[in-house]
Image (tube, rainbow, N blue to C red; front, side):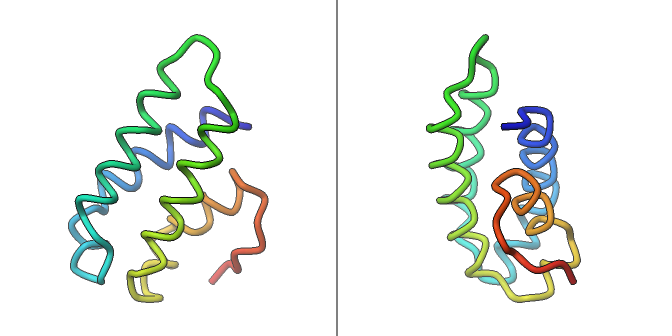
Length: 89
């Protein structure tokens, strides 16, 4: 797993948290997922299983937001990190 990409995603989600919340994502859940990710990436050897679980939870929370958030890059970053089939806009 690319820890640098996870760090980039954390920054991206924090920057867009208010807009994500306005589009339907639960802000408290977003903050909780980001906190888990931040704690894990700060470790000398991040647990990739824990990162994957937190990323999957984050993805589920972000899916609550409108499709317009795809253009903000959140889903593209998740796709790059998780290697999932999240479509690019």
